[in-house]
Length: 201
Image 1: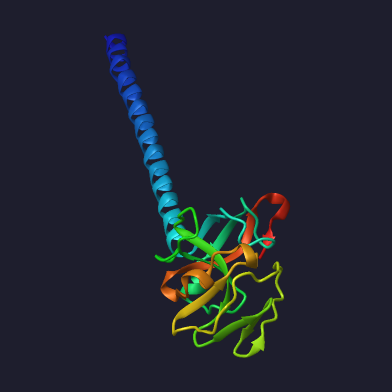
Image 2: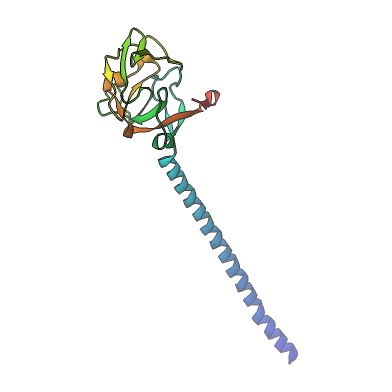
């Protein structure tokens, strides 16, 4: 009799142990799947927030900023420096293409250098640009001749005058006017491609 009871007890306990093990493995798999799902969603959300509010990559589609930027370069643009900082003369910025821009293939965004700040009076003579009557010291790389002249422009409040570093091959504020601050996406601060030209701008 005791042997039969022992045998019966063994038959009952073995399935319980297997069921518990299966449930434990199932819960473990479910937890892993949920954890990975949360991680992926969080990563996508963080990436979206960074791209929307902090940094964004851009591709250079033309030669208008040579020799500083070349066709095919890829940049990272700092949006926070515009939202919470100051736009200075000489900054390279990415901005929404003006509605009046009509210089060939239509693009959504443009990249140029800021040479005129709100309130500045701009003009040119020969290859020299004048800002408020003083010759602009273009300490950055650029090409001459100037090409299209700048004819007595006063930059309105909250707007900026843009010119490409490849002066004679740039469709810029000389053609379509000044750019409102609200259209400026951010400052280009680092080139990430090609790797041979990786570095700060």
